[in-house]
Image (cartoon, rainbow, N blue to C red; front, top):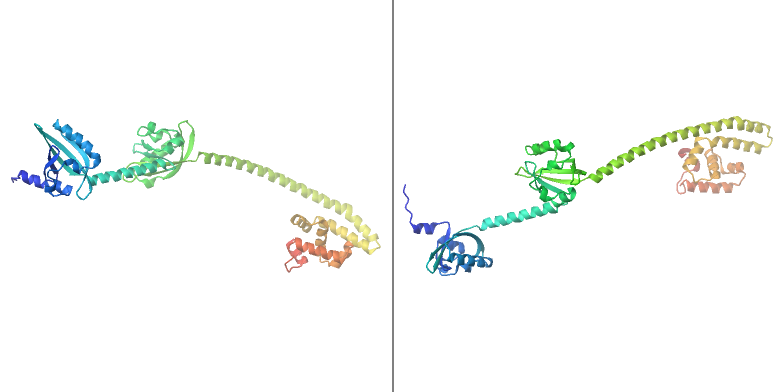
Length: 392
């Protein structure tokens, strides 16, 4: 089928804006160009083309149109205009020059690229935002390509490792800084992560060799960048923590050895103490108690017999569990208070204790008051006898 299309139809129905200028003034403009500028065609005829340009484009276009006066070279150019409503629009134009004697005809062919410029601006802003975040984050961070090349690294990574951006970005692979013992494991992770990210750990530890050849222990967090084969990895230097942990382990081991030695010494001390107590008890039974018994038989004064009974009882109590517990638990008791506490526990009354100790009942009552206070019984309704019997 043959289609006949006149130049007028092409001019009026073109989706490309066309403006024809003679010596910088508009002489002809097609409908799409008028619509784009926001004017009626009649309003545009005879106006300077520069009158629609944003200020920063005036000098550029003036220079271009001056050059075109003496040349037939075609020029491609991006610039902004102001519409009748004051809206800013970006145009991508091709300027064709035709010269005839002293007249210069410029043909502007252009399309509206405003929305693309806005997208470009947003992409640029987004890129700047993420680059700023990438550079200012507190963690050492790198971007890794599928072939293991490091395409980006931030300042923190430089600080941590001593490596420079200029030496590494797009030039070296991460395999060059990983310690040999961790290399094969991490290579497997790298490959598997690009097939199934869930098949490998996101976080793990490994050893890194810095620019000075020093081993640094790092905790790594790595994940894929959605929609790409790239991964992003961030590092936390745990070298000091690892060294402190190792030192703590060594100190703990030494402390355990010291504790073992101390337990041996304490066991030996307990054995020595036990042997000593047994020897003392044996000596008391063999060398003292028999003579107390003889003195008791020969004594005529009942008070002497009572005193002998007290001596025998006290000697036995010194090594009894009650007396030992009383001495260990209540270090603040005086010898006299311990003696009276023992007699109270045996059920003796204040008068009986006074007779035994050759003192007054009043003095014994004072001692009872002191004992209750030291045992924390001042505000409690419990007798000294019950407390001593059930708690010591």
